[in-house]
Image (cartoon, rainbow, N blue to C red):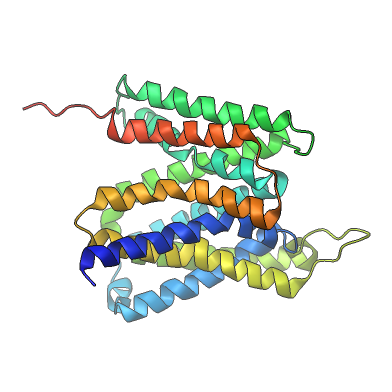
Length: 309
């Protein structure tokens, strides 16, 4: 198989993995609290990154990292996975999957704003068009869902969804600025190492009741099902797709195509949300998601500044 074909296959594996995680989040949250799910998912992803680091023989590289770099990753681990995923999972706990997923996908627009604020990068005039297109999609999803009799969209859930997008945009900006500190796989290993330590230390304080979903008169959480679904989240949200996508970008001679495949993920996700979770996807979700993605694509490919000779 040619390298470019391998790259496409790896990218498809990553996209299909990411497409299932919105459904996996909701299934896992049936038995686990957001904290419990993150604890299991983080440890699972750490194990996957540990195996990858071992295969790539990077332990000497990690051991030689300066103390300042260890301190940097100790702080970064608080942002991702701890804070980001706790907020994201809680938003999924409160919102229908068809709403939580597109809201979180709004992060590239928030990243554009953050870069303008903190790095003094002026936003090109054309990019405001993409921003407002995506914002229109976000408003349509939230407003359209509220019009449905079968869908509850609490304002706090929407707030957390937007906060998760803001946190991911912040993580991307910080990590990209400091990408010279370590390669991508090492950076993920270090972040999840510290994140898993923090979460494990906090587990006794949360207690067993804080790790499981709330019981009701007709439902008692199943810890085994929760653990298995949490492991799936760790493998197919945080671990395997990242490795596959990274390998795809290295092997391909057409990185733009590999990157564009990612835009299929939120649409495929709605299929799994509908067929597995049984959510009735309202028309405004489809239209709103198309608008959000269209705004991002517009800014990525059609609103760039022209290079001067």
